[in-house]
Length: 391
Image 1: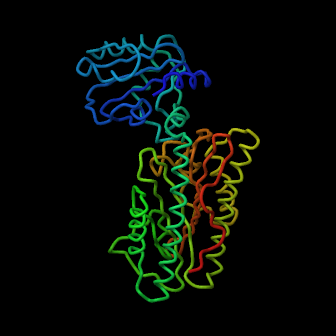
Image 2: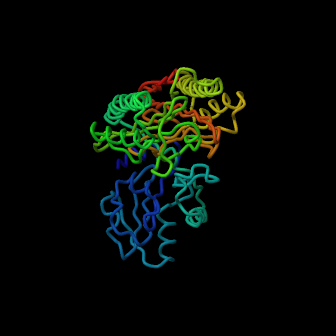
Image 3: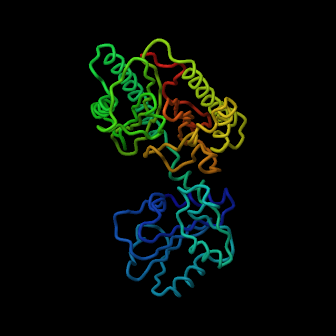
């Protein structure tokens, strides 16, 4: 944790301070930003206040006096709840804007971790509580050059394995060896291990109506072989098996045969157009040095699919933050499930993955990753699907 960087970010945003607090490990973001050990026992409330200027202040319970010893600043110990309230009021000082892990109307659930009662308590002291969402993103989701290099390395390997997986399906169908969804899923997992990659979950490998469930999971109970005339969707994500490595997460689609149906081709063309609209908007915003938010990119992609008459079949946000976890702690590309008003900033990585899902029939999704370079130029990483994969 770098106190000077946090304080500079607070002053830049005209915020008086950032208040971290926790009880029984409820706020994992506080631990990550402050560099605290999540495995240590935490049974009492603690507070850590970083003012925009001055020395940070710690407030801990007498049972766990050493809870915040690894952090800089002065320490005050409380015993009763009355002492807690009085000490917290004194620690925060005069009325000001204070950032907390809070999101107005729960717009960003991933950041809305402080309970309503604690928010009420801080407000009762006269302070205005504001969301720490952009601050969390700045210190938790911004990727450095080394992290970006691991993302690009994973991209090269995952793209190659994706191509191999489609080839395995094609070869299996033409040799009539019964290659199935589950077999290809396991093949991808084995290749990840061989190439020094790791992943949080197995990939999504499905044919026809299976991937109309966006989070379809291959199991022995639903497994089936690929056949001529099948539509195919493969969604795979992985990162280098190394500390600080960043995920790469893509989705491609294909058709087994030479003549996909006009409907499937229409869906594919629409999804590609929607994906490209979102990519074009983020590039335009940064080229013009205009603020860019995840909800804006979601609107751009969704407008294309809605205009084509498939709006109600686009059932998820357009994309998500990517970091050391597949779904990171930065801004999502979302104005459907939430209104994500976090500012997209240099060092952020996220997916753009519009899709159309016709239940009981077929599905198309195209997913690319975008990294906003530190010079402020958005870049699509890895290969980009432009045509259906013909198997």
